[in-house]
View 1 (cartoon, one colour):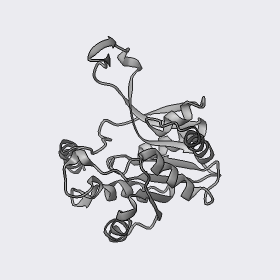
View 2 (tube, rainbow, N blue to C red):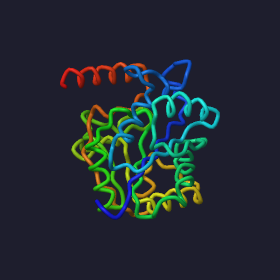
View 3 (cartoon, rainbow, N blue to C red):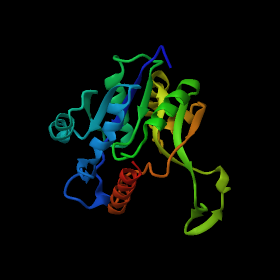
View 4 (spheres, rainbow, N blue to C red):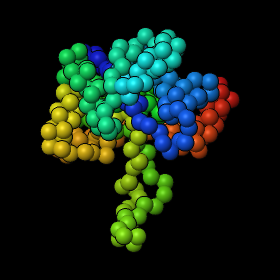
Length: 237
């Protein structure tokens, strides 16, 4: 994987209303560290990642800088960018901040700030897949039967073996994802994730088999589950 660099873009600008906490969910403690700090640490420790860009609500940037970046001694966090109205706007803000600092062929890994259990192996596999395709999407096969519903009535039952649950990171060459976001912004299109913006332009997005432990912490139950996963990891060492 010579001749290019890989960068992390970590959006953590959500309000986390479903968590029901007094602070935004990314700052809640997970085994002694803020959730977002645990996420950043995986990228910080990876020798494959050149630098990290964080996207945070504008009014939280001083707090995040002091209580997360400086408190944890993160050296790869080169910029904290103001978030936008929606996640897609926040990612675009981050891409604009990176635009003149990295090459079009460099790889950008876009990863949820509240998905702290990502593994170094998945980072490596994502980078490799992004180099060989228009994008790479970490995902896991759906475990449950999925129903398509309209007005409270089932109208279809898709084949489960064709259904995968999207996770992050979602990884792309910078030029590819920047153009996809720029065009979506110009056309007023909002996608369900970053990969969908590349897909709508005919791009090929490779699925990287993920991990069911790579959860996004959205509710109090998710936080309990993440604590249990970390406890299991400690026992396994």
